[in-house]
Length: 340
Image (cartoon, rainbow, N blue to C red; front, side, top):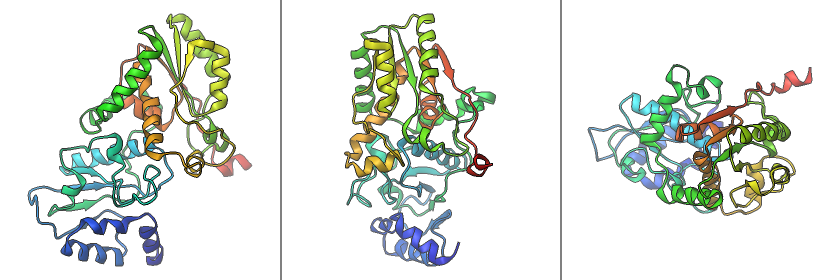
């Protein structure tokens, strides 16, 4: 990648706002790294004055148009990477453009901390004062929780490893947990419930290459209805962003089916995240309600899910279900394979 392209990309993602947190020596080292084209790969920042016995690892990501659980999973990968090397992981969603920062908030607010605690007791501000700072690569970590069936089946304890990371280093804010629990309990009144998570909108429309194929809503309804009867569940909690799927399930299940009340987009075309951004939805509240929507699945007795970033994450967060159905329908082909 040429220097001009590296400079452009560094500026575009908002990384230069990091300078506001650095002292004079750190700024000089940062600018030198920028000029020499090092800022997109893993690099160091020297010149801090505190914590000489610690190495801070700043976790970041380039692409701004990804959802909260995509961030959750890729951050989990880098948290493990840092811990394995003896570094202190700290997540920076303040100096890199992302879909949970409103206009004017870049460089001022860390959107990760809207929903989660930092992985350790150290804040981003404290980490950037450190004598030894390593900035992660802008690309996602090779080792991370993924949507392979080996992960969902916990082969060789793979899922257990990530559950340990989530339990100790990705703590969800108490107020968000409390709201999710209250919403679920208010709807079910303690009666048995099956949780269903199914993607629609852009995932179905665009068929992202090499991503898991999603089941159609008729298939999911049939499977959920059968399990509901077998497991003697009174309610169906539906987790989806697609109004068409919600309409179909509520017609089929009637009053037994409920969803989390939140803003939903009548999807037409393109990326669902871009659609929401254009609709001027409150970004903090959108992320919060999306997280709550997924967390409500934790309280279900039985789980029916497709493989997505959200369900990869929810498996890390909980392991309480009596029975699970996880769809394994293969993957969408690459575009060139589809044209053959």
